[in-house]
Length: 472
Image 1 (cartoon, rainbow, N blue to C red):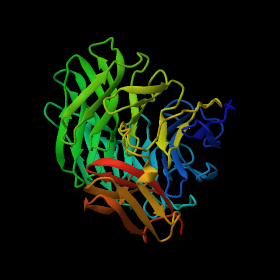
Image 2 (tube, one colour):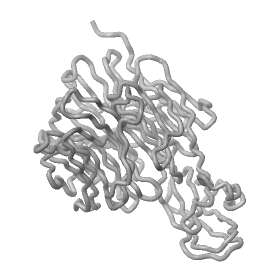
Image 3 (cartoon, rainbow, N blue to C red):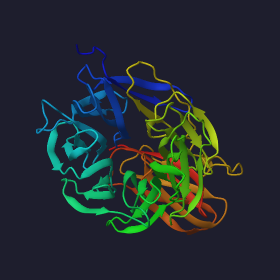
Image 4 (spheres, rainbow, N blue to C red):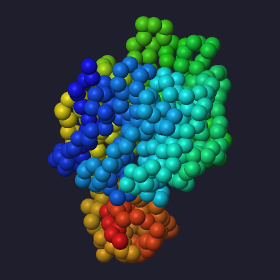
């Protein structure tokens, strides 16, 4: 008999005061699903959210289907669609959405793997318009390719990471799903492996992490690899150790362009003892520090990390395979400032000082998290409040606004604008200035409505940040 449990996706927005702005549930499965898994959550330019994952009935190799949910900025559902493919529908869906994101033209792209769960038959792309109507579906049938992560690139293209024939692989696709380049990457004693996570760095290059197979020692080693936007290998970090396995599951870039990698480490040979693992790398691939087994022993892995924009703070969560869900806030040197033990691991920043969590438990319980997303300078009490430095008028504005700031001392001055995702959109000023009052006009013609941030830096030190609202 089919189970009557409804598989539900939970989305909750939080603020610094732990006030719940809204909380909603969305039915994403057929009504008798045995499992719901959330793989991604992201914010759109209009403030709404996209959530992707899959539902499953029966055993892991039985029916499984990816899903996509689109909400507005208040969390109200706009549409839900399944990532069913013609070749698998309706008898066996067998798809899982790895990521769903908004494209530069406002359309929605979902990308994932299809076929058997343990060994996919290939990958797929589905493009939808902003209302959820399908524009096209592209299936790449290749059982040698095992996709693990997918991200949108700043040039409008798509990057897929995973492995091909057991070799770490990156594939860059254009907006139509055509392959631009495809490369596998090996280094030193590494004779196989996979990329489990990939990001685009601020310089336009790529960094992927995962693990490499070291057949000599019969162990897996942490693999961190930097690749140019054209697919050329720039550097690779591996650290083979015959006494333990290490894997990278997530990574992010901070304000200094350093790379924060999280994952797990376990002793070898069995019986293994697994613990969360974290490491910091310079932009050139040198390891600054690494930590393992310093967290609660119930934390068997760390799986997700983001840098709070314009600060030296990180949010780190346990992975999906950890015994307990935990979320940590750490500083640059991995000193844990606080932790919560009852929060899901999937989250994203949401505009100004908010965070959104996505979870897929059958129960109705959702725990709120209070997190410090204060964008003011960190650790410099001598800097006056931001409003003494930076203000914009009119604000909200269209199509231009004047940004005024006051400098107490002369120095190299940079004024940049970022969107709500922390992505750079404009440099308004980058030159030496004398102390005193200054004004800069920002003229906007090709950006969407929404919230932006102007960031003032003097002598490489962040001085002030202000919010700008563009309303057309």
